[in-house]
Image (cartoon, rainbow, N blue to C red; front, top):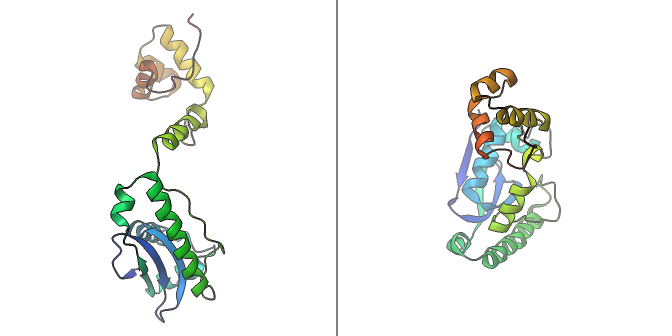
Length: 195
């Protein structure tokens, strides 16, 4: 149960489709095809498509009838990987046009949710990385385990001269994490007045 067949060279950029055993195109997408195949396969194994628009993909996957088929292989792979941001953006836009073309060609059988294809930039720049880091600092980070009160309490105990082990016993926070707070690697944005 559950295997995706592959048709064509997926080691590069391009437009792909998922087909069933009758070669009917069920879904159209684009990007680095090996990455996209892996991503879809992960979601199919976890049955994440069972209750959304990609339900047909899930059903065909479970019957071993799903094929990842290359519809268009891009000749711009090295430019995309090594090019400037402007060149990457132009390639993204051309992929968007090609994906829309293939979607329009197979729209009667496609389960795609978007009728108008829009690509999002997947090329992080120094500026976007910096903005993302700033936006996810401290309690705004979606993976944040501790609230601001706990961090302030830890910083106050650090100022009182308590060891990481003592603080860990009182708060239940890992000693290594407390060490990172002490050295400013974590929560440097939270300042408290010295006692």
